[in-house]
Length: 353
Ligand code: SF4
Image (cartoon, rainbow, N blue to C red; front, side, top):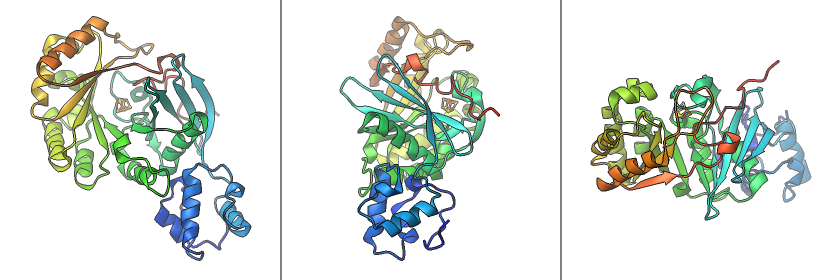
């Protein structure tokens, strides 16, 4: 690696470097060079040679510094669903793998669903990723490269959700850094309001972002407001029970004044009864929350069934009668196992040797 550059990058690839880190790296250059480099990496440039507004000597030095690679990961497989959803299987530099998905809705909004960890330690019983176990956290470069790979394939991306593999609030430092870079006006410039962190209910993480940001949208997978049933479905409830979760969400709302999205994965005849909806409505009060109802997406070998359209409608009607805004989320990406809870179905997280 070149010794001419000022800062040791500690194995973070270019897309995971903040503008400040690039400024430190290029400290011996005129200050505008860091802005130029940051803008190129935000565009997802594929080679240092393509950074044509920078002098050749600097392109060569950057290339030497990063061992010739602007990205640490590669797309191993690309799968397109009938509904147009795109799922990418990404191979990471250590041979591990993650998946990310690009979902497009009828209004043409393109949402990148990004992973934050390889596998997931949370063990939600209805989720394929939960069954894979946990390997490691993703770095900010590995998180943002998913965005770049999806944008290479589909062009402009309007929204980002941290709803892929992993629990983002257990990798908060790296997710936070990725969001800082993603939203920086001199780079990708995505509005914080277009970014959502989705958590299974990590109370310390919710309190952390309630006080220190990033002030993006927050979604919480609640699934059931019945303590016993939630513990069965989501083991996180043993560590951070519903009462603690609600106290954290109330603090979040006191600080941010933002509405929260509560996600309910509906499992046919498990959490679809009228009482389940009534218990949820009681628990929600006095939170300002919208409920997203997600009919469970089938996964071979799992002991659940997709709810009927009638079960989903009746559940929604009970909540609406209690004054709670409810959205029935379309299941996009099912055909490529890219819908909610299905990531990892076709994947081994580590390379077979
Ligand atoms: S639902 Fe989310 S938090 Fe739960 S196991 Fe799956 S990826 Fe992890």
